[in-house]
Length: 75
Image (cartoon, rainbow, N blue to C red; front, side, top):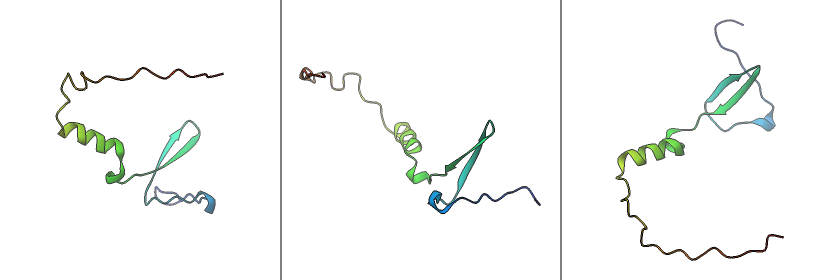
């Protein structure tokens, strides 16, 4: 091995449709994670949404009346 990189060959049935992969070593195991583009990252999108949106009022849905849950026979 020259340099600081290695190549990992995966079988065709494990083909990943990502341009980049993140590799983590957990104990003796390697975990491969496809890098998700920012526009497809739901966690990042939600963080940005909540940061740029006003919080709901305290009395939001206070006047809502929910019907009682249906009785079900789970036997």
